[in-house]
Length: 134
Image (cartoon, rainbow, N blue to C red; front, side, top):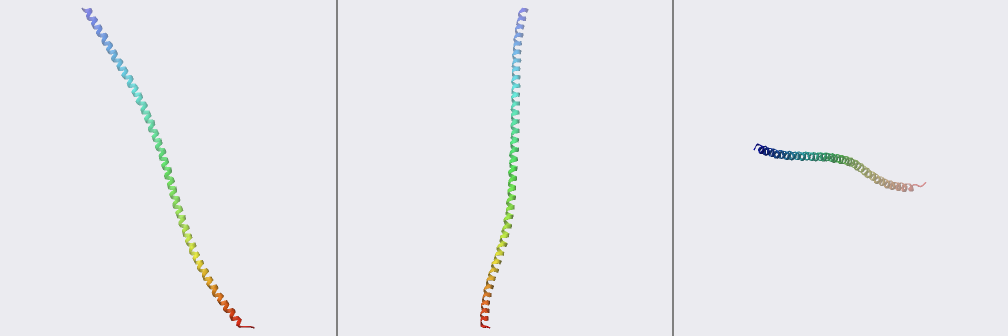
Protein backbone atom coordinates (compact mmCIF):
# COMPACT_ATOMS: atom_id res chain seq x y z
CA UNK A 1 0.00 0.00 0.00
CA UNK A 2 2.78 2.40 0.89
CA UNK A 3 4.57 1.57 -2.31
CA UNK A 4 1.40 2.33 -4.30
CA UNK A 5 1.06 5.63 -2.54
CA UNK A 6 4.72 6.43 -3.18
CA UNK A 7 4.23 5.55 -6.85
CA UNK A 8 1.09 7.69 -7.03
CA UNK A 9 2.89 10.53 -5.27
CA UNK A 10 5.87 10.17 -7.64
CA UNK A 11 3.49 10.17 -10.59
CA UNK A 12 1.76 13.32 -9.32
CA UNK A 13 5.15 14.90 -8.64
CA UNK A 14 6.29 14.03 -12.12
CA UNK A 15 3.05 15.41 -13.59
CA UNK A 16 3.35 18.59 -11.47
CA UNK A 17 6.98 18.94 -12.55
CA UNK A 18 5.86 18.68 -16.18
CA UNK A 19 3.14 21.26 -15.58
CA UNK A 20 5.66 23.59 -13.90
CA UNK A 21 8.10 23.13 -16.78
CA UNK A 22 5.30 23.91 -19.24
CA UNK A 23 4.43 27.05 -17.26
CA UNK A 24 8.10 28.06 -17.13
CA UNK A 25 8.36 27.48 -20.90
CA UNK A 26 5.25 29.57 -21.49
CA UNK A 27 6.64 32.31 -19.23
CA UNK A 28 9.99 32.21 -21.05
CA UNK A 29 8.21 32.38 -24.41
CA UNK A 30 6.10 35.32 -23.16
CA UNK A 31 9.24 37.04 -21.86
CA UNK A 32 10.97 36.55 -25.22
CA UNK A 33 7.92 37.93 -27.02
CA UNK A 34 7.89 40.90 -24.63
CA UNK A 35 11.61 41.52 -25.29
CA UNK A 36 10.91 41.37 -29.05
CA UNK A 37 7.96 43.76 -28.71
CA UNK A 38 10.07 46.15 -26.61
CA UNK A 39 12.86 46.01 -29.21
CA UNK A 40 10.35 46.67 -31.99
CA UNK A 41 8.86 49.55 -30.02
CA UNK A 42 12.39 50.93 -29.55
CA UNK A 43 13.00 50.75 -33.30
CA UNK A 44 9.69 52.47 -33.98
CA UNK A 45 10.56 55.15 -31.42
CA UNK A 46 13.92 55.68 -33.14
CA UNK A 47 12.17 55.91 -36.52
CA UNK A 48 9.69 58.39 -35.07
CA UNK A 49 12.54 60.44 -33.61
CA UNK A 50 14.33 60.42 -36.98
CA UNK A 51 11.11 61.54 -38.71
CA UNK A 52 10.67 64.29 -36.13
CA UNK A 53 14.24 65.49 -36.67
CA UNK A 54 13.71 65.47 -40.45
CA UNK A 55 10.50 67.42 -39.97
CA UNK A 56 12.34 70.00 -37.87
CA UNK A 57 15.06 70.26 -40.54
CA UNK A 58 12.44 70.76 -43.26
CA UNK A 59 10.67 73.37 -41.12
CA UNK A 60 13.95 75.24 -40.65
CA UNK A 61 14.55 75.08 -44.40
CA UNK A 62 11.07 76.43 -45.10
CA UNK A 63 11.58 79.19 -42.51
CA UNK A 64 14.88 80.15 -44.16
CA UNK A 65 13.14 80.29 -47.56
CA UNK A 66 10.33 82.43 -46.10
CA UNK A 67 12.91 84.77 -44.55
CA UNK A 68 14.71 85.03 -47.89
CA UNK A 69 11.47 85.82 -49.73
CA UNK A 70 10.58 88.39 -47.05
CA UNK A 71 13.97 90.03 -47.53
CA UNK A 72 13.50 90.10 -51.31
CA UNK A 73 10.06 91.67 -50.90
CA UNK A 74 11.49 94.33 -48.57
CA UNK A 75 14.29 95.05 -51.05
CA UNK A 76 11.78 95.31 -53.90
CA UNK A 77 9.59 97.62 -51.83
CA UNK A 78 12.54 99.87 -51.04
CA UNK A 79 13.62 99.87 -54.69
CA UNK A 80 10.09 100.78 -55.79
CA UNK A 81 9.97 103.62 -53.26
CA UNK A 82 13.36 104.85 -54.47
CA UNK A 83 12.19 104.70 -58.09
CA UNK A 84 9.01 106.58 -57.16
CA UNK A 85 11.15 109.30 -55.58
CA UNK A 86 13.28 109.40 -58.73
CA UNK A 87 10.17 109.62 -60.90
CA UNK A 88 8.84 112.48 -58.76
CA UNK A 89 12.17 114.28 -59.11
CA UNK A 90 12.13 113.79 -62.90
CA UNK A 91 8.52 115.01 -63.06
CA UNK A 92 9.55 118.12 -61.11
CA UNK A 93 12.46 118.75 -63.47
CA UNK A 94 10.19 118.29 -66.51
CA UNK A 95 7.74 120.81 -65.07
CA UNK A 96 10.59 123.29 -64.57
CA UNK A 97 11.84 122.69 -68.13
CA UNK A 98 8.30 123.13 -69.47
CA UNK A 99 7.91 126.42 -67.60
CA UNK A 100 11.30 127.60 -68.88
CA UNK A 101 10.34 126.59 -72.43
CA UNK A 102 7.11 128.57 -72.17
CA UNK A 103 9.03 131.60 -70.93
CA UNK A 104 11.53 131.15 -73.77
CA UNK A 105 8.68 130.91 -76.29
CA UNK A 106 7.14 134.07 -74.86
CA UNK A 107 10.53 135.79 -75.06
CA UNK A 108 10.95 134.65 -78.69
CA UNK A 109 7.46 135.96 -79.49
CA UNK A 110 8.30 139.28 -77.81
CA UNK A 111 11.61 139.44 -79.68
CA UNK A 112 9.84 138.71 -82.97
CA UNK A 113 7.31 141.43 -82.21
CA UNK A 114 10.14 143.82 -81.36
CA UNK A 115 11.86 142.83 -84.61
CA UNK A 116 8.74 143.67 -86.59
CA UNK A 117 8.44 146.99 -84.77
CA UNK A 118 12.11 147.68 -85.52
CA UNK A 119 11.54 146.74 -89.18
CA UNK A 120 8.68 149.21 -89.30
CA UNK A 121 10.80 151.91 -87.66
CA UNK A 122 13.68 151.16 -90.01
CA UNK A 123 11.34 151.49 -92.99
CA UNK A 124 10.05 154.80 -91.63
CA UNK A 125 13.59 155.98 -91.00
CA UNK A 126 14.60 154.99 -94.52
CA UNK A 127 11.62 156.82 -95.94
CA UNK A 128 12.45 159.85 -93.84
CA UNK A 129 16.07 159.75 -94.95
CA UNK A 130 14.91 159.42 -98.52
CA UNK A 131 13.29 162.83 -98.23
CA UNK A 132 16.60 164.42 -97.43
CA UNK A 133 18.91 164.33 -100.41
CA UNK A 134 22.24 165.82 -100.34
